[in-house]
Image (cartoon, rainbow, N blue to C red):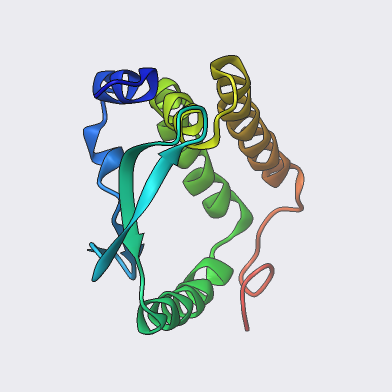
Length: 144
């Protein structure tokens, strides 16, 4: 534990953000192998991530296709509520996300903080647009 990146990673609140597993169809996969995550400033290994197999990738694609039908069936305000909930989670974890981005991408912490803020602001804005859509009626905005 010599580098600043490792020191900062030890200080984050959400240690589960460092698990390095892949979420596929609601299940965390550790991967058969691990890929090193390297601090670009020091070339020091600061963690590892699941190295998914082609079958894992195919399952992730299949799961996304299955999930899309449920998402498509939601009304705009329902989608907005889910995305606002996601934005709130990003807001409550933004400092940890910024530290992780800095450590794995090598960008400055201020730039990572800005990125974390700008993504959640964009999501919140996009969600607010759902209230300007015409009122929902059965059969409108739903998959047929």
